Image (cartoon, rainbow, N blue to C red; front, side, top):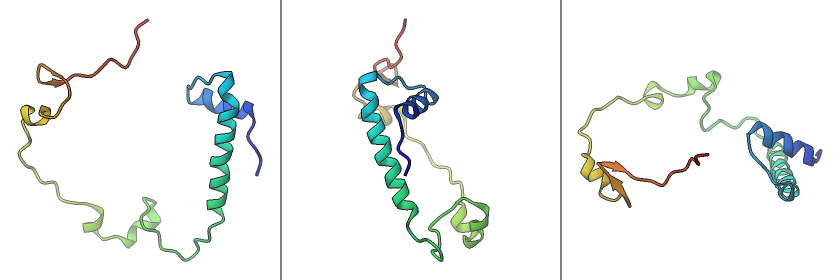
Length: 105
């Protein structure tokens, strides 16, 4: 298996719009190499002749009946706001109240 380099990790982080500190880079290299070695191990598993449990690929859909693929839409009465918010740790004007997760500049 080809080992990932720090440059590979920086590239992936950039694509994912993640900011990795320089002191974290080597740790990410090690973790990503472990993940890739596990994937490589999984690719060695012999799966010929094994029926897939489920696959959304069109060539596997014929093994499922219409009842297995879909279910009927059934309408039912929904819960009211009071019941839904009864276990909320914090609420305001019939809505969940949460801390802000977006920083303002």
